[in-house]
Image (cartoon, rainbow, N blue to C red; front, side):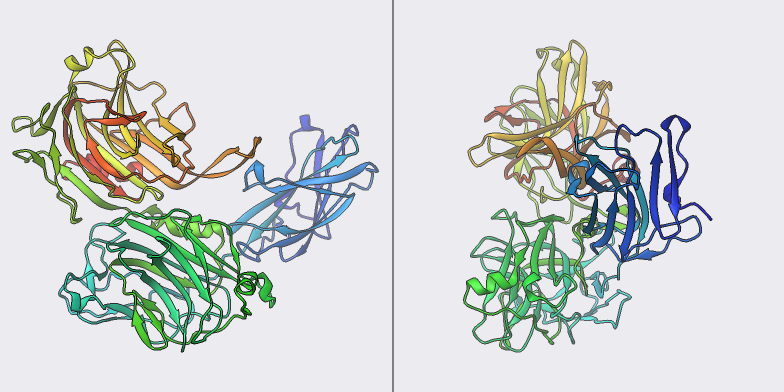
Length: 639
């Protein structure tokens, strides 16, 4: 009989031997009887053991598997087990009691091969070696609708956004009224387009797009996902809605009353609706930035309405805990039952009892719907916005001093950011060097930020030349900010150069989080382990914040344990990834506001950290830039 893939032989020094029984169970036997032997793992449903000849995909991401754990027949002192999927963090390990136990909550997060690891425990709380069960998770059903909104350009006369999904029938979206069009400000970067709903003409501010028929069954599990660029928060602004005759079954929108993002469900198609909501954790999201929103309605693959939940995600992060719809409806004196809204999917407006309103102002891009509930890991993948296997990114700000004159550095991206203004002293535009020159004492240039949603991924890059003679006059430990975004008394993100010792300088990229009182709650600094910053030469320094990068972090409630965290920093000098000796993780949800400055920073509530040097360009992207993309978009002479 062929051995299963999970039961490859281990080195002789381990004194262990793995085998597979014919009834589909993974076994490991040890000659050491001092601790429990590896347990038996039996699959119940829906997953099956992978063998060398057969490894069938079953279930799917988020689909729970049932497995039975049993003590080795020769063990008489087993009192429990601990288990986890090896694709999860150690902090997700679970413990159960008994010499035999059936676990019904083994939930893989992603498709592909997974390994279930189980250890047996004896009455002395000693754990033995693990048994491993390898199984394959089937690919999930794809999206039922996807609208990239790249079908036309401004003035082209194109009024149809094609549905490019492949599951089920297609539902093209039709642009309605003169205020709907196309914009080059789009999430996938150069040559992309987005849905434009941002006319300055009041009579054109009732624009939207819509499908002719419903794209999903709203009585069953579904997911809405989209990128938004909101420009006006004076009123509630609908992004995606699924209307019925009297009410909207689901709506993904900005709420002016709660001053945040919302995913809502209306309990019944009624003229007196009861609305249940899942709200964003943070209020007052920044305007004129790209933000990823996801709303998930999950019926948990059963017919019991008591299990149905509603969950909003912002930039891939769940907002609060999932809302149980039945309990929430009961609390409002209503009875919850899922219902199917039959009207077409709306982009940019509400439709209630046939009346339209709450029109979106801004841009909508990369929208999709699924006829199932995406798992948290799948939501993260959607927020990454991969294109041909690499992240898509959009240049949202570029201040270029190479041709600047006077007292400002102009912003030359398609986005409506103002020029940076030079300080009254210490900052001049050097036409010979084609750069902004800063004296390291009082010179800087600044503008009001932010220009990115810092709870999502972003990249910042500066072309800078350090002034060697001026830096030599600074004391050891001096830290100068190349560029950064203020957040109260700190810099929310910043590129720095620090003087370690005489003639020894290093680049840094940092993120700092503060609480409502201004106290620093997390400070992550990426510093090269050995690289030295050069002076008197032009260098491209790039900082990347990947909001979807997973890290294991200490559990704040129990520091001895770990849990999953999201967010990681990287620093590039040229195209070189400066590997840091410190932790790169930054899991705080932090958004800067106010001054975005080149040449000075904020630390501990004080403004200073002036840069002795020159800058030619400061560029900021929504999304992650990889090393190859940095070569192409930052270092290329034509960039």
